Image (cartoon, rainbow, N blue to C red; front, side, top):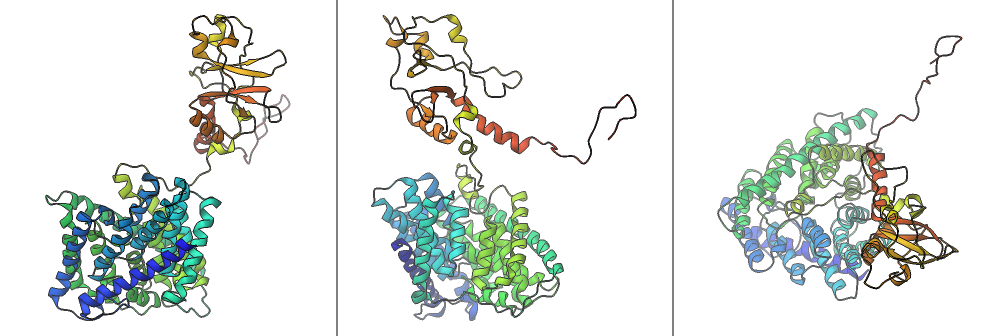
Length: 583
């Protein structure tokens, strides 16, 4: 909860800092409110020069401060969680919000959410690093700070928790879910005195009635949103590849990205900055056709091209604006609905497609606007966009950068098959055993003992040899174990099994899950263990090996790829002597 409170304070400070830089650069005044750089006319030289100057400052901060401030924040947070054991350098907590404020305040078409995710995550990580915690516990606190910053920025507690689960935690467990909820709750409560209450973009729909035809067109809107998500994601990484081929140091790339922003600002000034005012106009249905087309084209281009330069800024606010403009354009073609209806649908669709987090896209749209009757249309559109994006792109804009750094990342959740099966379902129930008094060397047939899997081996595949041999007494009590290597090459002078027997042996319970057994095998660096009775840990009931642990994955593979028809509408019977065959 203290991390949640600090995340809210960080969000408040970042938004005020963005407002201050924007006022100083474009209006030559001191102010802290969020204003759009394009809300008033400015000299062309200022529109061109401000983003370039901001890019130069960011390049210098990244070069001589920390390279971790480059990018939109979420990939960096994911990388810290997965590759650096949830540790973030303290200077990132200071430099990231400053660089984001400079980038956005000088006209960058970015959002504050990516930097606040990195900043809030850095706060949680730094505090966690001062405590005696495991990497998983640090992850819970780091993600708590990130989600708290998001919740305070957008007043969206549930969407922030869903974003943490779908994008950052890579698990759904009480140990991480509950701390995140506590931090988000604290941040949302503290947001009221700091930033106010109520939705960011309040929309009032009186007696909204969505027709079945409009719901069907939400599928079309979702597919179009998914295609746009694919296009802007590809644009970001085409831009990144292009910048990587430039024969100049990456420190200068943000300045070139700033020049692209400036040119776009001359074409559509309101595409500059965070653009909350523009999003509000789009969602309320008050945007003109010129603004809709200008935002859809110019914002998409300058955001995608400049983000590839490695500058600092988030993706959510631009995606909100691009999606809302697409929906507003669709509203001129699709069946008539309430003003702003299709803009909200487009926003949810593009968020679901770009971030590959469809539930987050739905809940974000609802919490930003409080249009709760639109739940079903938003769900349909977001799911359609998610499916389209998943079919056409291997990874999202959040995970592609990590993959390009050589790391494998999957955001798909599935039940671990090793967590479902128990030892008694895959173990060898009748292993070859030895007695303590058996003489060495053992008979030759001992070395040919095999451990077949249940159900037999696939054609052409030999069963593995038994890697260790339980040693039992006449009553079946487990005394110890002897590895195959010791039987084959016993120490010089050893005459009986008792002299080379390992006691006490590592044993597993008959009811333990394969995941627990795999973890114990890894910790003890063994490949097999006797299985003992649940009530009597000295009574041998079987043997389990690493090869048999793989049976869980074989079963999952069969369930995914083996197709069958358990039920049919017709039944075949053998023809009888008295008449024709019956169907």
